[in-house]
Image 1 (tube, rainbow, N blue to C red):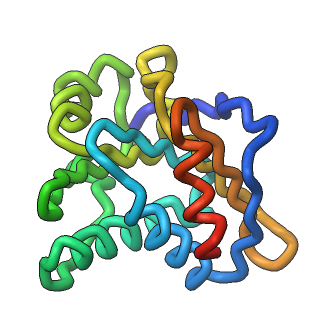
Image 2 (image 1 turned 60 degrees about the vertical axis):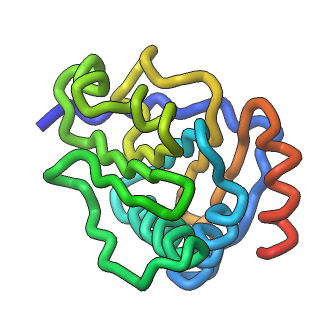
Length: 169
């Protein structure tokens, strides 16, 4: 198993949400599904048990639903390292990088191809170190007053797109 890298993104000016329970984390994932598009990278930060997989699973299931696909199981890619889903016109790649030993392994796992063909969700993005693309949406999940807090901050046009998420939460 790789050493867990704890470097977090700069979240000054991030949009903050209180997530009261798993249902709120799922609601955030569903809201993000509607604004996701090809080339997007969503980096999911937070310790074990903070809801990264829950958020990713809800986002993927909602995007599959929006594309008219029937519900399907969305397992965590803890051991496979990446799972890919076809959601209509958007391919989604879900990466779990907790166990990678070398950041360069991301090339073998196909991150570049995933972003060319669709969008990518990455759990444990800190394990990519300097190979983590700059253009992305960072979501930091941490303990909150009544459950979890989520901090969302993106580069490029993410700020404008996150307005839709704020309205749904």
